[in-house]
Image (cartoon, rainbow, N blue to C red):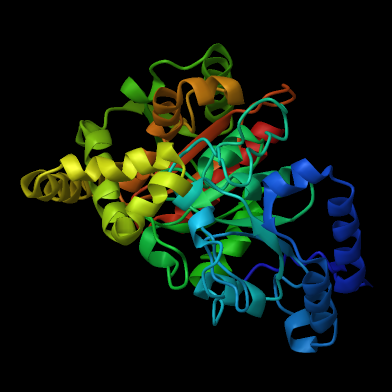
Length: 437
């Protein structure tokens, strides 16, 4: 596995204590205004974090692991032993503490990572904008009046502000990639089956996946290797990778900056050796309705016993999305399952002729918080539109910044079918090097 420990530098000639580095990070957190701090973290226990850092320094085996000393903020839907998992909801704030770490968290800690606070999120991870009436709306790191994107909202901000090295997030319809793209970060949504969901509070068992947000795709790849317990192959893409440029509705309605940044990115990738070919993905027709039916149906089953209580203490925008399932018949659900299954097979077939596909991660720069509050349904759907195609196809996807030195960020999404994780990561790293040159 790739060693990205921040405790070792210059081929091991220079080393640092996890305690010292963590103390500096805790000090940065302490400088945040209280209202900002509360909108980023549902819980931040400095003493617990420092104890973890000291324990790492005393454990030579863990200190030598590939993520030793890496500060990873934890989305508050992953269990951590001794802490309550709220999933961003007031209704779960009094739930019993977790008895053990979620499997993803356990793997990160075993590889030397230090859990650095529990981060805010859209309630139950059920929106792509990141608003939360219980903990507050975290502000975009690049535009204080703009949304972070969701649902891994607080996690994205911890990385963008330099508080944490990596954020552990979940992605059901774009919840890793949307906040990464809107905050100038990289992010990776793996093939669902490659990272176990044990100990993660579910939204939709058919669509949930677990992935990291970081500044660089290479960091995401190193963390993915730990999360998936897989070895990175030496190379899985050719010298002139063939990339399908997906246009159609995925490039409809782009705002001026996203459209400009996307075309500029394509030109640079072409000059850098990528063979770009326009491609149509007809199996995506009607995908949004399929996702809406299946995710709402599964979420409704999860929350059925608490729906009445959520009428008074829940986010009404989230509750409306869950209750949408009450209008679906059994035939609609069955048809949606069949359509998705067929689409996954068709996409796998078309993917044999390509190394990956590319499209903008989200169609616009981060909208203003006030605009989203006034027009939630439309703007939430817009944020989810492009990234949720990959979840529909049971694929994997990386997002990387393509905005250069501009004040607001935009994201480029490279994606492929299920199982193509390492190929997509390799191509994303190549693309990031080209765009940064």
